[in-house]
Amino acid sequence: MNKENLSCQSHSAPSLQGRAGGESATSILFVCHGNICRSPMAEFVMKDLVEKAGLADQFYIESAATSTEEIGNPVYPPARAKLAEHGIGCRGKTARQMTRADYDRFDLLIGMDRWNIRNMQRICGDDPDGKIHLLMDYTERPGEVADPWYTGNFDATWRDVLEGCQGLLNKLSFSVSTSF
Image 1 (cartoon, rainbow, N blue to C red):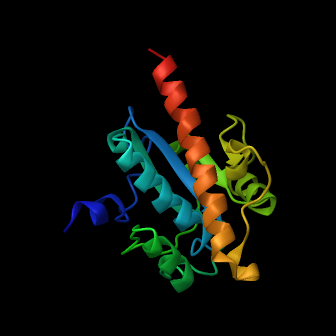
Image 2 (spheres, rainbow, N blue to C red):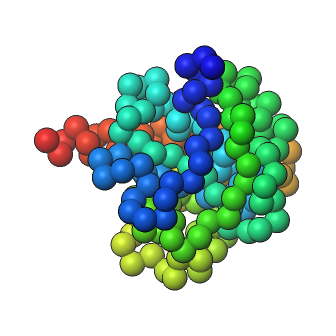
């Protein structure tokens, strides 16, 4: 298996006991409606970014859905093709639904749109620790990630996801570097 594919492999879900990724890793769960377009794109873009930055051991990254509609399905072919166009694989990823336990297991739960945020809060029983955020809030143009399921525009979604993940990584990297 080549190193590029290794960083983008889907990992089996960690134990529900304790935090995902261990105590020292920052754990991020990207969430959208079905977990076949936007959130897996964000998962694998972020994995690629942290790998290229030499920070892969400091992060644990997954994605999930708020709905049950696509559970067990692979990444939607046009989303998979857009990732591949940029040298990012997502082999083995299948959709899963977010659970209430994910709130305790992840440091950040990142939604793609406001509807996702409402559903994430419903699943988690609100957001007492302030972990739930919109991906585009980490950019200069806060808002929602374009949903290619409805628009068919995977280029716009790619741009949103890349910009959001870069902004999130910059914020987290700055936080890590200033905490010592």
